[in-house]
Length: 94
Image (tube, rainbow, N blue to C red; front, side, top):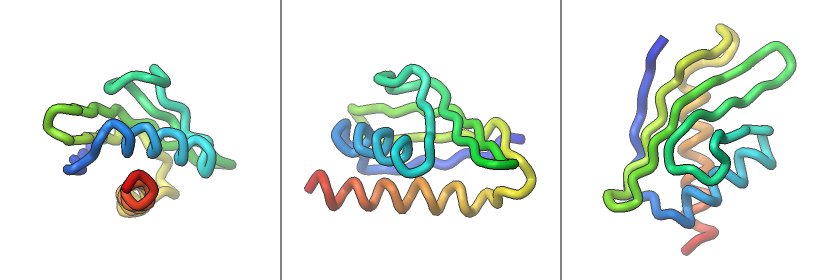
């Protein structure tokens, strides 16, 4: 499986907020924790979503690729969740 999406207009502060918020709300683990590229994993009872991420601070592009997900998680829910978190962080970071 490979499904990718790029989010534009992301600052370092917004990306840091996204990582913190997703960890607090969904238990997402970014590896490396302070890296601009790597992997992320979110798990729950009976489901899992694994992704790669790449944040380019100079362009403001944040790209994710789903590398694995259980069938119960719709792809649209993954992208909607990330988009909602980015928008929340945009409001918080001004």
